[in-house]
Length: 146
Ligand code: RB5
Image (cartoon, rainbow, N blue to C red; front, side, top):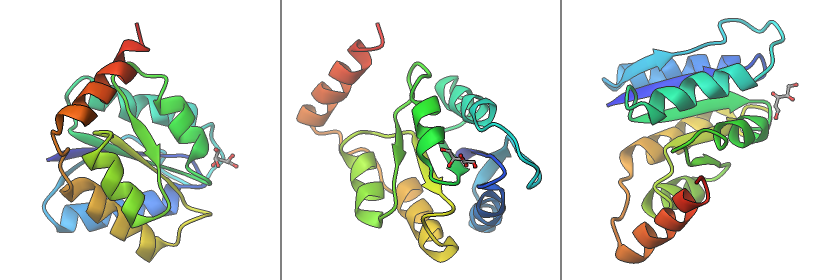
């Protein structure tokens, strides 16, 4: 599984921790920046990771900023992206099972590193349930993009 990572300056340290955590488990990680704590706008990083997922280059994306909110708002503008900002493992699990979310957004100033890594583990290891009712609802979400 290939996972695209993106962050702004606020999320950079968490992105680095996630990169190591995933690589240690054998995941292929596509690090799309940023690469330091110098202040940057988060939008290009949300776009890079989101487009990588939407294009099928990456299976899932993980975006980190201060709150996770700007990243999720930006990523959800990309056709085919269902980005979920999560701060608890139950939401990270259910957004895969029910929403087939393909991007997880984390707030580095909201969620501590250990907890964030747990959310990452849950997100990348939980499949979409495939239930007809959830597929129907996702199709309705996709129809909003047209
Ligand atoms: C940057 O200061 C901060 O606004 C950003 O990381 C994020 O929280 C935006 O939603």
